[in-house]
Length: 619
Image (tube, helix red, strand yellow):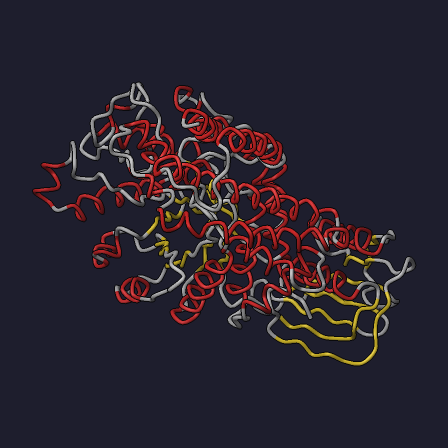
């Protein structure tokens, strides 16, 4: 059975229930209108998978004739359900509306696996962790279209994720920040409110997430608000992708700083129905290094940090919401968390494949009960996600989540340095997080990949995700290093070190990565015709990005050759390589526009064209 997440209990019987054109979907007439939506999802699944239409009928006669029945028991734990299939019918009973929806999602997966002949079985299921979320970065380069965000919500719901966060720093159209968002295509109020309504129908809590302390580069380098930055800002300094990641913390000593942040929180909060608000407050690297230096020397950096964070939390609570905040600063001195309101939620993130439980143990030791663990899908700074690392990180963090009985898991997907990776590549990691937060049974990587290949991509050989994983593991050049070298060269070519991109030792062997990538691409082409349309699109995106990975390897080796005068195995003619790089980027832009607004695509253009020009200059 390919179902994900793994149900709590499955009892298989003998025989089958045959779906055919005479089978109807019956909805208990006492249910609300959302049940019609769930029945519609099932109807669409049958049409897309089996090719025929079924009728949806509302009835008060549950189970009287052959068909698929949707009803509520009104009993049991939240989100629990029972799915019973016998020789005549399939009955889906939810403890509540969410449980009924998840019963439908499970049946959809079974239809994808078994087609029109469903085996007799009874599935009894409920979640092990109540809050199962996904945090998607929409602020550091890539802003998804509303259609793409709805598709993301659909995927979350399909795998029983009940919380979605969109990480925002400057990419919402704040009324008084035209200077800040003018170079982008920000999310609008109408888009967010429509997405919020869409998510509610799917029992997904769309939680507003807004940088409110650190990570305010775009806001605090503007002429309007630069005076509120911890460090002195040269507003004419060229934009930097790497600097955006590390600087621009708000000046906590200026009362106007809190006034600005509070007004942003209030304006953004009003768009959402969620009772939560994530104020972030992570990576405040500059605190105490500028305008707050004297205050920090007197009071201590952690005390200054926690005082401002408490002020933000108190404001969110006064607005009737529950604050969330990242825990990376707090874990350095966990006892300070007791200063914060107890209803607040600490988000403990860790992204290493070698997961430790030290930070979670420290936080739990303080007596704080509201903790989420936050792993990551390992896509940032890569053209293709590192799925093997994602599996190890997410499974390890979820094991700790079950051990310490935390309140939630919030899986994360970041977009560092322009968000070069294709959003669809994070789906594998999203499913890992969904599977291991719903169920405390941690499937092996091989088994999980086999099921994802089948359920998500229609590959019942079960090998597709393994190929995706191997492509990511075969990376030639890290995108962060690629961008870093370009920006260091622009700052001072005399001190920039090409070893950042490619050392002489790596240049000697990078041709092996390129050859291996070619082998993996060939494997994808062989079975492409067997896949459904959606999977074909995803596979072709992987192929394109794998070609990009190869070009990064060629560029690194060729630049190293130009610098040393030595020809390496993967060195290419400079001008030929520049042309190939530019042609690849034309295709990349087409792929970008299938999921995203223009957003900061132009910033990626600047990186690509700089390298093309550099190659030609060195010819």
